[in-house]
Amino acid sequence: MTEYLNALSAELSAVGIRGSRRRRILAEAEDHLRESGDEARFGQPKVIAARFADELATNGARRTALFSLFALAPAGIGYALLFGLNRSGPDITSAKTPPLGVAAALVIALAPQISLAAGLLAIALAWRLRATPVAPAAAISLLHRRAAVALGAGAATLSGIAVYAVEYSRGLPDWWTTLAFAVIATAIVPVAVAAVALGSTARLRAQAEGPAGDVFDDLGPLLDRLPVRLRGRPWRFCLLVAAAVAVAAFVGGGLDEGPRNAVAEFGAICACFAVLGRFLGLRG
Image 1 (cartoon, one colour):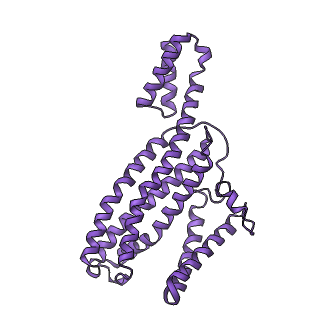
Image 2 (spheres, one colour; image 1 turned 30 degrees about the vertical axis):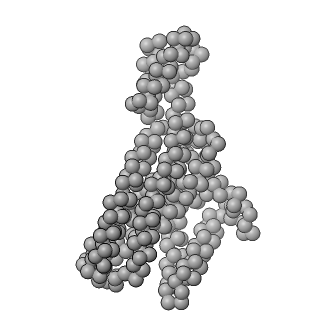
Image 3 (cartoon, helix red, strand yellow; image 1 turned 90 degrees about the vertical axis):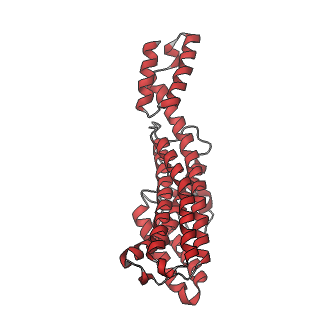
């Protein structure tokens, strides 16, 4: 039995199951073997380890996707509060270091949208896998990537706000700068905790085969109801989403800023789709 448990311990380590999880599994295996005394019926160590890795990775990825979205909520609320209370803002060329200030302004304009889109995609995939005891390794990897992009873009947003507050401090009210750093200090904690949880879950090496699927599998029931055929046509899907967001930006910006905002949003969505589309499972 000792030899079997040692082999099982090594296989569990190979698939990323370590620490208390491995000790608990080994204790349960030892109890089972003491009762039955039949190692052959319990299963090969490699097969048992792969089964545990698949189940733990599937459940962990689903939980982490949901936790990531909740972890980003304080950042989203803080962002809306900051820029809702100070809609005009300083002139973009008035930064202490203009290139750095402009870069920060671009980050805080683009990164929140990437974070929101990636987070919603992660939730959509987690929902598709909700009743799946063991998901394909490719789908779990995709779920990790979507959650990682959501958290990374959220952290980039908070960093951009910090740089923006420093670079444009001369043109911003003192209360706004103070509030900005309070939001950053509060919101970065859950984002960091979620990132650590994601890293821990990502260490599990799922073994199950199968396709990851894409956004058309995630949103299939909704997309199939539209009068326009989108399944299997990723760029048509991109252009439709970009057009809808552009219309909303045009209406929200009015005649003064609306056209500029609409063009900027349309171009940004298409550019992000081209760069991140494959990585996030939006296109093949």
